[in-house]
Image (cartoon, rainbow, N blue to C red; front, side, top):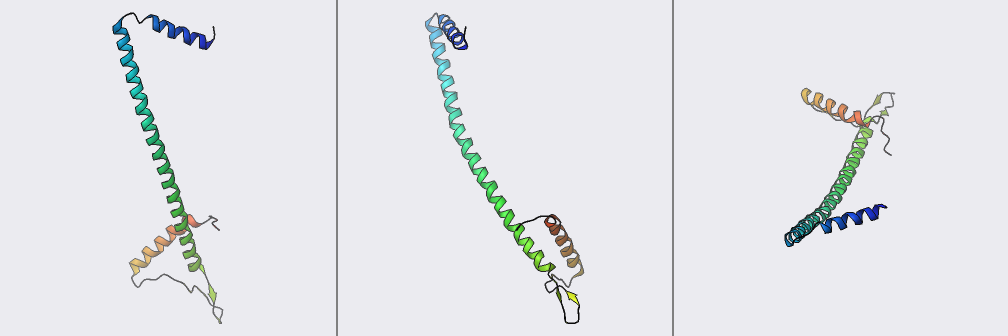
Length: 125
């Protein structure tokens, strides 16, 4: 017996077990319950799809912002790493971040070190 024939046989057995009006009413109520659940699932299916679409776009937007910020940080370090040489042969950095406060200088150096860490070895060009 094929799978389709077995399913039809099961359905026929189910129909044979409906003997009374109460059985029919129960079956109708059960069908209505299942149809309502199916409608709810369909409604939520569309909502979940919309949430997924929104989340995917949000991730893309955040990735684009991150890429832009990374590019700006790379430009900053490129400017800070630039060196020039005086007529006397002294090499210096024309672009610098400074503070007249020693504690702030330490903080700046720590921040720059932390920012530079992820930039090493990356090739964004």
